[in-house]
Image (cartoon, rainbow over all chains, first blue to last red; front, side, top):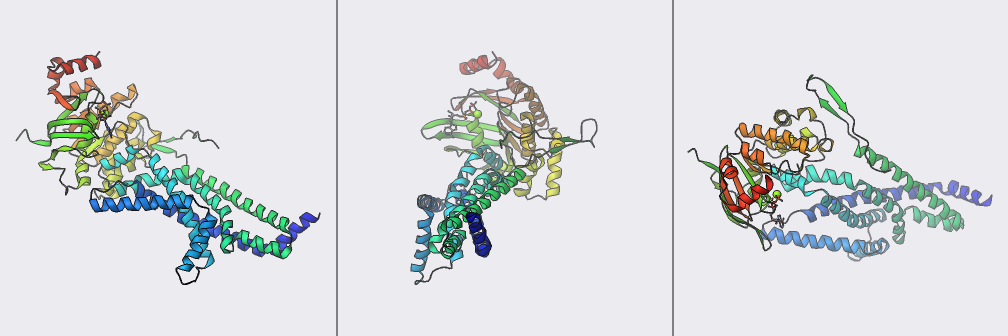
Length: 259
Length: 246
Ligand SMILES: Nc1ncnc2c1ncn2[C@@H]1O[C@H](COP(=O)(O)OP(=O)(O)OP(=O)(O)O)[C@@H](O)[C@H]1O
Ligand SMILES: [Mg+2]
């Protein structure tokens, strides 16, 4: 059949382009997600921190909070494709016409964009941990920072993992808009292959399948990782009333999480 | 002096917005004394305890701990809180840590102890509250009574001078109330200074040295358990006791 021959031909002829595209797409999506998470954590922690009693620090904190809110609103309220153009060419304008190299540009754009979403995810995560644990920590003399890093953030990380995975998958797909500034990710190569082979549908069919394989396997892998992390921890009761050396192994009931 | 007070509260007021919750509380607690605070819901019992621990900032008045005001700007809050521990109605254990770790994290991070030493201390107190066997369990694997006993061990691990209890048994199923009160009785016998907000009148009667009846943000009556429970003078106290004792 002609169609499958075309598909096969595109794969065998351009596999090097396709692989390279996959490589860059994954590089940008992964780095962007991790950096975005870091941005989100930082702004989430700052925004949920109690205001200082010191007047100056208090004012500074409020200003920073306002800036973070503006950042979140702006980057969630505009398309990433437009953000890419503004950041890429904006940088060039203030840099005497010299643009940043494409791959770093792509990573920066995706990071900043993802950071805006992550900031909200992290903030929600922090607020979902009941205040009691913070008070418990304060009541034994821990500082806000110690409470955050020892008690709250570990739980937030576990809770937001599904949302973070979701952002990663979205990024795998959305890096395609970076084509607008010419970043050599998968979609960019699709364009080149299409022009070379003059088989538009067949080319995008192949690329479509590749995107799906990427997102599907990443989703599955992360789901597995989540399960591992949520781990049904069994525990051992050390010693019983009659025998201090006994070890009673207690299995926790299976969680009632669906899926 | 026999009557040396470890905590002294002077004319403590606390408002939330224009809602005056505490309207001038004066209370002085001696070292080793067990004070029970009773009173109807909304009378400001929790707010007072939380002010003592500085989880709430008093609007006015003063709180003196071992002779020094804790409201001065230069007071090391963390330091003070290790000396005045608090046990909450909702336990407030750290859900991401084992029982043992719940009891060591404060010792390590706040008191700067070595892990081995912290674990030794923690196990000692876990033993005391009968929870040493469960050292490797996570909080969500424990019953309410067990959680509260761990919370008490966590507080004890910081070697506090005073322990504040805010209705420690109110969130428990009836059959678990006893095990927690038992532990608290032991602490009282061991000479800990305790301020206990409770609805357990039997406990207040048997264990406390002094009972405080709070009503609408003030101390309406105080006295020995004998005085409060058998011959209350304030009509509001009579009313309250009639209600809770049926
Ligand atoms: N953070 C807060 N903001 C506003 N109002 C508050 C706050 N905390 C407590 N209050 C109010 O203060 C009053 C006293 O509350 P508090 O919790 O001290 O009462 P309580 O005596 O402990 O009652 P209960 O027996 O129900 O625990 C209540 O009317 C409550 O609504
Ligand atoms: Mg209360």
